[in-house]
Structure formats: structure tokens, C-alpha cells
Length: 243
Image (cartoon, rainbow, N blue to C red):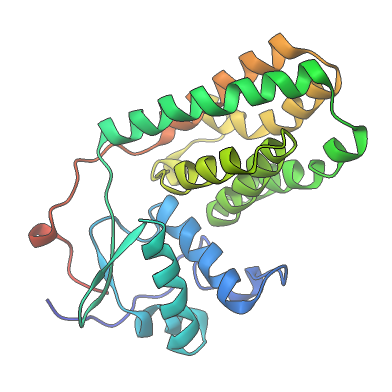
């Protein structure tokens, strides 16, 4: 398996430094973008990528990119291929279904309790910029930014429940998802419309509508599962050549 020259960065924003928003260190920003690229399949499951080729896309040295990929390896999103780079881990349909079931068990009760018990207006308002950013990124079809903001929104919402261990478990589950179908979503589809549900969810929680919030959260997770890819796992010896 040889390492090929890196192709140009896709229009979705992979490697586009202007999308780095300065909220984190360079390494953290690159990690967030690469994580989003794995989740949206901009980095293709089964494919091996070298740190130097990815660094060319970012216009930075290989060091922060290699460090970022090692962070993703710890999360189980990629695996190290000695002397070649990092292979993007594939997930089967059954594994994606398992992730969905666990998310329903963990996230829905928290959202219902937040609505039933009440949350301060300040805490909810702090999440509204992220809800707006999710919709804006979807309209621009910048799905790497979309999944990054979506992750921040849901983890921030769950954090209001006060269970830090649960938040970290959900972080791992959400980071393990694959949303390869995002780029093919037509405007007006049910799944595309689900990007607007974040603001609605905040409204339901603010209105202390526990049943409504629970129903919306179940529907929202269902929409997400509907656009998760379901390819069969790629065996290492069948993997796409490195990039």
C-alpha cells in the first residue's frame, strides 16, 4: 500500500483554515475538524490517510495533524497503520443501531427531566447560538461545522442535568457515529428539517413541556439514525489505498 498525493480539500471545509474559529488551540481545532470529517465520511471509512497529506490540506506542519489523529485513535475513530498513517474505522449497520438504542436510553430521560424540573433561562439562552449555528451550517452545507456544533449543543444540553459521567459516555457514542448520508440530503427532506429541531427543543424545555420534549428528542435521534450510513465493515486487507 503506497501513500498517494493528497487530493484537493473538498468544498465542505476539510482543511480550510478560515473555518477554524479560535475557540481552541490549533491542535484542538484540527482534531474537531478531522473528527467531523470522519463523522460525515469526508474521510472515507476504510481509507488510510497520512499525516503529511492531511497537513497539506491545512497548510500546517505534520505535527499537530499527527497529534490530532492520535487523539482520534484514542476515541476509536481511526486506527494506526504502522509506517503508513491512520485508517478510518468503519461501522456496520448493526453497530449504528446499537449506538442509537443506547443514545435513546441515555439522552431522552435527561431531556425529559430537564423540562419537568425546569432549567434557568440563562442556561438555555446560552445554547441558542449553537442551535442557530447548526441551522446555518446546514444551509451552507458545511456539514463538518454542522456536526461539530451539533455535538457541542447536545453535550451542553445534557451537561445541564449535572451528570458529567453520562455526558462523557454520550460524547463517545456521538463521536462514534457516521453521517455519510448528509451530503446527499435534499433541501426540504424530513432529515434536513430536523436541523431546526434544536431551537424547538429549547422552547419545549423552557415551557416545561416534558412530554413534548421527550417526544421531540426521540424523533430527533430517529432522524439522525435515518441518515447514518450503514455500510458493511471494511476488512483491513480490503481497505482503500492510502491518501
